[in-house]
Length: 114
Length: 115
Image (cartoon, rainbow over all chains, first blue to last red; front, side, top):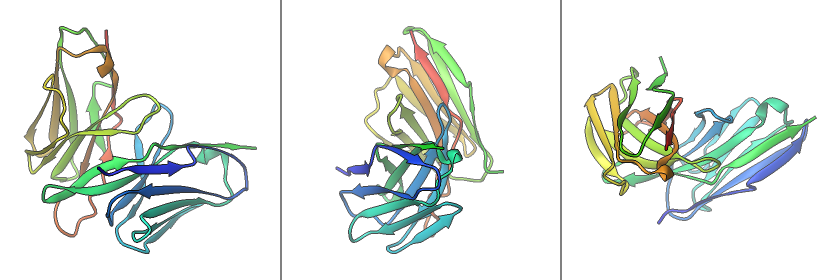
């Protein structure tokens, strides 16, 4: 059974500081996604990582994937209040003959303080 | 258009009622998904449709019945639900097939309360 573990689960950051969220998973996969969810809202796709060594950046967020270590990271640079949200990683495991069968991590609740 | 729409936004139903949730996308995606999300928990996959055929059922109780009438629409029929079924129900869609990313686009969800 695939297990996806994020840490930390709660992250309280000061503005302008840097931090990293980690996502570990238990079985082989080369597809990993990061999503953002604001309270009471749906999930917004942030990054799609499809191969070992993949690195994607958007604004103050950068995500990477190491399939050999079964580890993805989401790095936050110079945090701002607007980044406060819950962040999920999700690992894709083939279901039958196709992909799309996502298992989500527990989520990291990020709060950015002045 | 990268939008997935869901109706209704909120639904309150009794345990003996029958209701349906609807989901629609016009991105030409051929895979559609239903997820259940309880408060402060991650989404849990319920069903996957691929080219309008049910390809994955994650051992969901039969009181939840999915339907895919065409490539743009996905329904979830509800009958004899329990209070513990109260949750946010999310629909998603993605491209399907070799060479695609399978990136899933989520709708806004239906918040269901079972009384």
